[in-house]
Amino acid sequence: LIYSLDLDEDGICLVKMTLTTMGCPLTDVLARDVSAAAKLVPEVKNVDVQFVWEPAWTPSRMSRAARLALGIHE
Picture 1: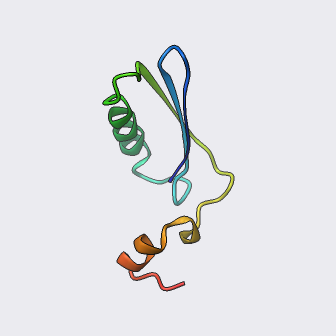
Picture 2: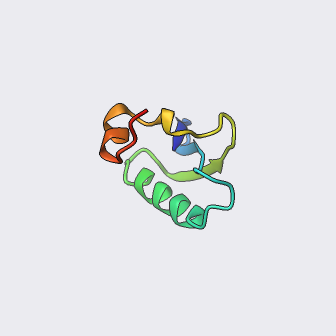
């Protein structure tokens, strides 16, 4: 669900990610967990998580292994 990560010279990490659906009840949890994980990198001083809706997420964005693990046979 993460589309990009950018780390600037000041240690600010911009994470652009999406959700599988608008109104996802886990938005706050995902933002908190992504931020906490990024802060484990010593160079990261602060994290800005931005949710984006383009391109839209579909199961085709998953790796083949992930699709198989979830029983998705596209």
